[in-house]
Length: 235
Ligand SMILES: Nc1ncnc2c1ncn2[C@@H]1O[C@H](COP(=O)(O)OP(=O)(O)OP(=O)(O)O)[C@@H](O)[C@H]1O
Image (tube, rainbow, N blue to C red; front, side, top):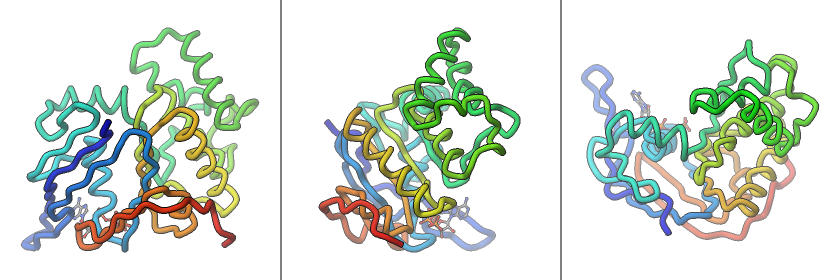
């Protein structure tokens, strides 16, 4: 089953009189359970593509579906619902709420989903334990290392058990050890739960984990290759 299908996606941005290409006729299909890295130089369109896949931004033309659902024709509220329940996002800046504890940050989305307090607390603690943060549930983001904060962000992303996780430069602010731990966590979630991962990165060490490496340039896919995952090479 295809997790994501993009057909001839185009996106341009206007900056004054200038028209900037974000995506230029991007077509690809990603199957459920794949572990994909998007690479390419700065400005090549990786974030624009991830944003389209996550329904955070709408393409100018082309078609995009996630699961069975067409994103480009979906209403704003249906898109918000899809994002809330079916897609996990992990960003470069962890985007945690600084005044909330690790547990409260993870609980926040479940609260929005209307889950009762006791149930969401138990689930948040389970997910935090799963990402290796048992005993740290009550800490504020400022009381956690960068790697731990990113794991809270991953816990938040996977708490609703999404089938798809989109990660935009998730290791950009992490040291080599924390980056390796995060990637091992992604691999485990992919292998044990069958979660589909699409990860944008500049980091060749992160690319080593991918089973499929897609390279972008100037808004286009310039190569798309299956590869044997190598794990993280020493820095
Ligand atoms: N909101 C925006 N307004 C104007 N131009 C934009 C906007 N978002 C993206 N762009 C432009 O679209 C192109 C693709 O940007 P994108 O962020 O997708 O690249 P990227 O490959 O993710 O880059 P990086 O690796 O630096 O994050 C770039 O030329 C960028 O400047």
